[in-house]
Image 1: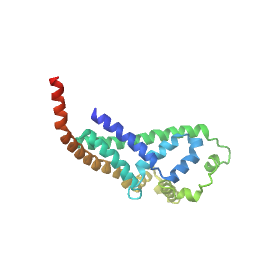
Image 2: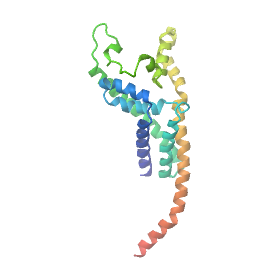
Image 3: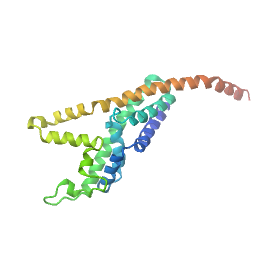
Length: 216
């Protein structure tokens, strides 16, 4: 029961804080794309930021993953179980990102209508006043993906094999991906320590009250 409660609480805190700390440029892109991708785009960018954001560039990610993990550790109060729960949460968040992405693709198929000679940008809504192609390339994570795509477009055909592209993407986001379960696991152990200290302080009082209730 503690594991389920800790897992649910950590996921809820991650998503809530993730949206609260979501980069303003990503929000602007979400506002632009929401007419064709539906409101799912806000959830996607929140999870996208949680998964692929680099804590070295976005220290708020340490706060988000750390806070949720500390509370999980306080609830579970078992080191191994806390670390396993953190890794499970990380896998769940990645999986949920993929599910929402597939949902957005379905929405796009329904909402975007292509005609002969029309490219992707012509099919999308017009840019809002504060968004340009130049600012899009400076948007966190999205800008990196655009640069990567342009680099691939100018590469030799041998480098365009799917396995090589996936491998290079993995190298690009290795730190971003691996750092999240590491941060969460470390902070969950801190939560376990805090939880045990609080339990040790409160245990005599709780035991005394239980004995009093039994006597009644």
